[in-house]
Image 1 (cartoon, helix red, strand yellow):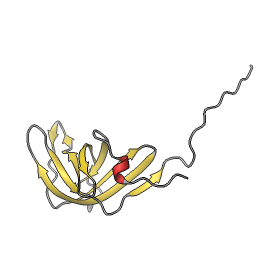
Image 2 (cartoon, one colour):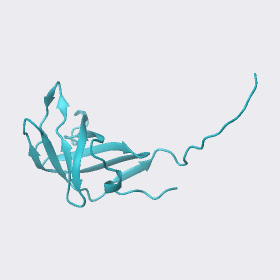
Image 3 (cartoon, rainbow, N blue to C red):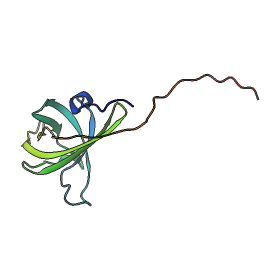
Image 4 (cartoon, rainbow, N blue to C red):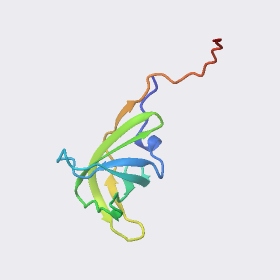
Length: 120
């Protein structure tokens, strides 16, 4: 089994993520957003989620959970929103770099291509 990758190895600009901006309320919605950038060990920039064609601002100092799938790994982390920009052009929020990342591999083994001739 491959060793677990770090967050910086899994992130990519434009990666779709699920954002749960109110994780203390289990019935609160999880929203789709996209990774905008990051600085390893400092922060992760995420676009503000869009709901009903409007940006939903994620407020500063609010706990938030982020989940995503990348390179065959299901990942998640939580942390606080450090700052938020509600600019009309490019709204985003900045999350603190997480202390730990939950990572689960989708497959234990890689797929192997095969060619099996058969007759009917």
